[in-house]
Length: 331
Image (tube, rainbow, N blue to C red; front, side, top):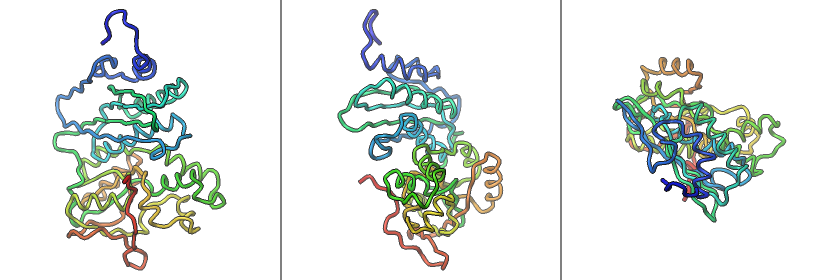
């Protein structure tokens, strides 16, 4: 805290103008302390963190409102997959320069999403950098005691499901980089794919339903094929996936049919931020009905198998599809 009469630093002024209005939880203390407090009479605190970096997770000319929504939503996606109800988040900004117009738009969108998803800002840090813009969020959520859904609970015979559609964001990025011919898709289809890349849709309404039905779950961030492999490894199981059952949007289907992208591009591209989960067969009907009730599309794509073999994606002929890569990797 500053002594009486002391002049606020540029960082303090930036925080007071743009982010103190977002810190609505009493435990944030108006962002004037060195820490925040989350109170809970019962339940487990679930913690997740993700950073996004200019040139890696978003493009240099992306608008600040979409960047703000993405950095919070990728963390909310993790909480949803763990069956957690959002409680709050802390934010770290590494800025090349503090531009008022950029920060005002960023903070406004961040505040809108914080309100919509009931996940208030609790604190954070702002620093300068000569390098690319980097934004990190650490998000907190609650589950009832012992109810967090881990990667490691899948059992042979469980059904494997994903929410939404797969491959949209990867193709949206390819469109932005000129990797897909514009004559295959009309403008609304292109806009849909780009929006799926820029603004993920965390499946927060599914969190409590996963707690009731899922044996394991994780969000699909690096690619369905690679993330499925991670889930199977954590659970010490294998899996067989019916490739034609994987849900894809109509724009993705058109680009696939035109031969401009491959099946591998769709399942290994990443940035889907959908939920991958395993459901016992005797829970499937109830799970699907509950998901329909909260308006989250879920699709059964395969089954968990015993053993430690790598998961397989089976084509229409029943033979495994060879994949040279499984997911996006930073290194």
